[in-house]
Amino acid sequence: MNDVDAERGGDVGDPAAAAHALESVVDPVVAVADGTITYANAAARDAFELGEVDRDAATALGTYWSRLVTVIDETTVGTARRVDLDADDFDSARIHRGADGATITFGHSWNDTEESGGSSTGTSDLLVKDRALEEAPVGITISDPDMDDNPLVYVNDAYEEVTGYTFDEVVGRNCRFLQGEDSDEDAIAEMAAAIDADRPVTVELKNYRKDGTEFWNEVTIAPVRDGDGRVTNYVGFQNDITARKEAELALEERTEELEYILDRVEGLIQDVTAVVAGSTDRSELEAEVCNRIAGETGYDGAWIGERNPATGTIGVRSSAGADPETNSIATDADHPAAETLETGELAVDTVDGTTRAAFPLSYNDIEYGVLTVRTDRDREVDDREAVILSALARAVASGINARETSRVLTTDAVVAVELELTDPALAPVALSADADCRLEYRRSVHRTDDETASLFTVTGANADEIAAAAAELSDVDCRVVVDRDDECLVELTSPTDLVGWLSERGARTRAIESEDGRARVTLEIPRSANVRSIVEAVEDRYEGTDVVSFQQRERDGETREEFAARLEEALTDRQFGALQRAYLGGYFEWPRPTTGEELAQSMGVSRPTFHEHLRTAEAKLCRAFFGDA
Image (cartoon, rainbow, N blue to C red; front, side, top):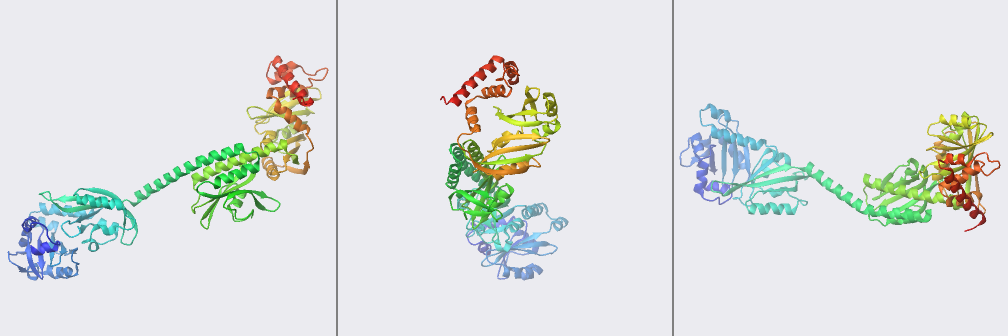
């Protein structure tokens, strides 16, 4: 047994106990040193008719020896190899090479054992177990803690497939050779502690294949004990969990990113919303928005630009943080800002490790420019971040729209635009054609439900004719306010009312005159606004729109419209409606063509209520006219 002990790497405990264990093994086991059989168990003595004394291996093993001796010489000390014998008695042999010799275990053929009439139950059980180990879908290893550094003495085929190492390259080495620089030190320490304590353990750690590629390995190690409770081996199971682990890590990364984005964007949204609500003019709004975005972690700059049709460039209106690449960018340049103005969609690119994302500033189809954000990272803006920044851009555009709309009432620098429309989608166009009449715009009333009702004087058709024509139009409500012999006053209400639609875009409707299916519309737009964008929006909305004229002018003093707007601001909707109906309905004429009862009915209120609203409005009108504060 000395050679058996040496082959296992030194002290293996009680030699007598080891010999007794081998005597019970049903496969033939022999120990060979210098060509001599130094030990043979009972199965080997019976198979090869060996006595108790030393025997010459070549004589005792016959043709097997010529095959085995070559493999023994080629096997590295401390490792094991399997040899196919292709013989009738034995299919294969496993050689364990020691420093002073080798141990050879012969494998029986399943069928031959049964046909020979020998005891097949023990051998069959061993073959089934051996086959189960070899064909298991997970990597299986067995190590020997009695040998120096607890080396592997067995690995199955699945282990070879997972790691890329062959049986001969693995046996005799400690399993740590799969570890590398990114292997988790805590997991490694946990395995070492479990082995020291002779207890099972399962860990997940990054390992490395023979070709150097990484894979995630779920490793389970458990001690194997003999009848006396002594640990004789460790069995290990390796399961390649790379796909699952990568999915888990990706989910964790996305979750962390989402939490980070939500945490920082919550404050960004609140601040930008406050800027939009609190700024007094467009320039202040744009400057504050750029400052807030540039000051946020993850962004190193932001700027807002506006298209200049005369030069074909995008001029920078405001910026903060990292300077824009230039003060102007050609509208056809290879730049996200140019692409966004062309498509109206988000555009992103990455140049020299910096990501640039451009968002359209558009509200109610009116273009107010482009917001460009620069990041301090080289990855693209993901979908969630894009949604959040797009929402911020819409809020900024809404704020700019509010500032530009307010300038209609305060600015002296305006552009008067005269348009001609022939699209029957515009109610006055359709009505003038169908009823063969003329409609002239008088005023509009903005109701509390955000709906706009426009008043028109109609000549050339009576109330019944204009009501019948309006009934043929979808989404148009026509209400006759006053019916006279030569003209009538009608109120047109539509979800797509032109006056209200233009007002939302910063333009004031000065006049609408429609006849023979053609309408002449006069607008006033602040000179600082994007006049071109507003006109293009009208052209897109109504087919056949022609621009008749543009005229820039300065308004001197308070115009009639400004006075009316100031008075209208002082009146409630009911007071304004009562005053307007009374005047346009001829209530102040004598004899009166209409009565207070009729006007009250047109407003859907009682006569006393109508008179109360009217007298209050008259008092406010007098105070405004005579300057009584």
